[in-house]
Amino acid sequence: MEYVCKVGTPTGEVVERTFAAPDETALRADLEQQGYYLFSIHRGLGLGRLRLRRPRVAPSLLLIFAQELAALLKAGLPLFQSLDVTLDRQKDPVFRRSLTTVREKVKSGTAISEAFRAEGDLYPPIFAASLVAGERSGSLESVLRRFSQHLRLNQGLKKKAVSASVYPIVLLSMMLLLVAVLVVYVIPQFKGFYEGLGAELPMPTQILLGVSDAVSSNLLWIGLVLAGGGVALWSWLQRPTSGLVIDRALLRLPYLGGLVRMYATSQLMRTLSTLLAGGLPLLNALEVAAASIGNRAMAGAVAAATPRIREGASLTASLESTGMLETLPLEMVKVGEQTGALGDMLNAVAEFYDEELDTRIATVLTLVEPILLVLMAVIVAGMLLAFYLPMFQAISAVQKTR
Image 1 (cartoon, rainbow, N blue to C red):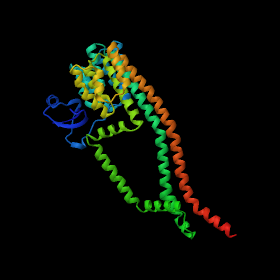
Image 2: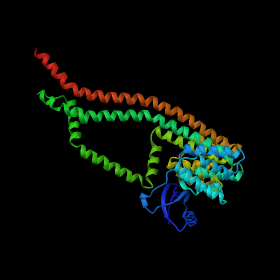
Image 3: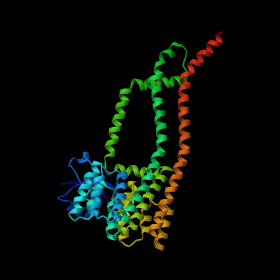
Image 4: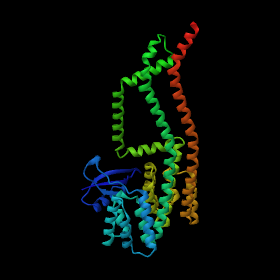
């Protein structure tokens, strides 16, 4: 039987691969012997690289579910009845089917954390880990509330990043569309007019006409090349290592790489703080926190450092060995370990980086927007100048002959 697994390799990479095994238990044992760390597992369909994946439950739906379940448990309702109530209110078909499965497993005596973990990557790893922490500490309701807060903060940060990028993307798209319309449709209409002037065209106009001719006469080939490039890019992105290559490249980008690193660090610190506050042991919390990091290069490095915790190293030394974290979070983690306030310090790092990200994103926007506007104005103005320059020269020549 085939299983699609998200695993951490012995070299520190986080990849998704397909494995064959008689059952899930045998697969887990085999992966552990090979030195892999298993983040998620679900049954494949035997379609190789074209396998179909179940869509993930939207974070907004999971947030509402966690809040409702916490409220019902606080009101004194048993867990199974609480799941019944949340299931009756659920409209999303994917989430509803999954909750039905979870409810039946809980009814048969399975722990709720195991029931959700069996759903694979339909849910983020931190959710099942939070439930484990709640079960062990006997405070499932409070752990669900902490998870809701964690999810709310993460979603808020993502929304800010998305909303901040919308305007520059729209502006750049409009500029490219305008240039394409001028080159493909407008300029060729005036080619005969320019030839009728009977004078040598200025160099900027000749360049503009040459570009327009090349694009207009090769639209089919250009379309085929773009389509082929898109297919090749899509095929490359399906490789297990492509995401890791992209994430490593993002971390190396000047300035923007710092923003990506700060966001990943914030994710790590907040997840770790949430799990430790719920009562999960440090080793398990760090393993889950590594899987929750969006940047796969950083996730792999942190996952590869978790064995150091098992060997007795401190959290500070383990995180420092990754080479991914800056001095500030490492120092604050060190203080937290020494004072016994590790959870508070981790949360403080996450909040500090969230505020710093807000400031830096605002700074980038204040620079990017005027730069794009000026660039758009220069390109369009240059094209229009090359477009009208022969007319100006013709008018000037007529005036001189009078």
